[in-house]
Length: 140
Image 1 (tube, helix red, strand yellow):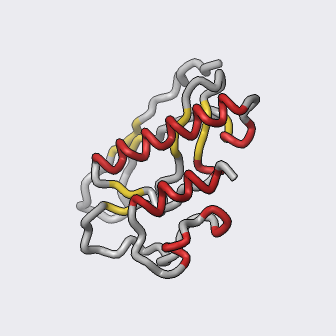
Image 2: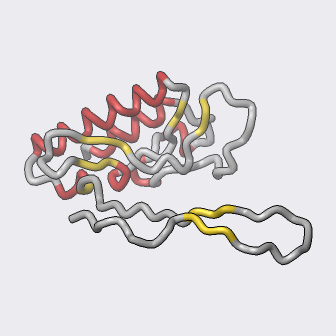
């Protein structure tokens, strides 16, 4: 249920503390959201689980088309919609731009070790194939 907008002003002027500096206008905003779905491990059926994984893989492909490599594919980062007819990938904190010359700031070995790609565990540079292998390991 959405709350009605506040009757208070969202912007206010204030006197600056140092003489001669301009008066600033500030805005205070809040965004209240709810969970967009549920984790794929709470799927009610094997069909819902597979649907979630397939849709997350398609989302991963879309990210790759935009030159973004996720690098943290795990069971906790795949969500299902409430009615379990769609799935999506979340948590792009460790993602990097593909062909980027800058370091992401993340450790070289990212993701959940149990489902991490074997090559990534052996120190290979992370590629989209490692993410796809992580999707594979989630089935087992």
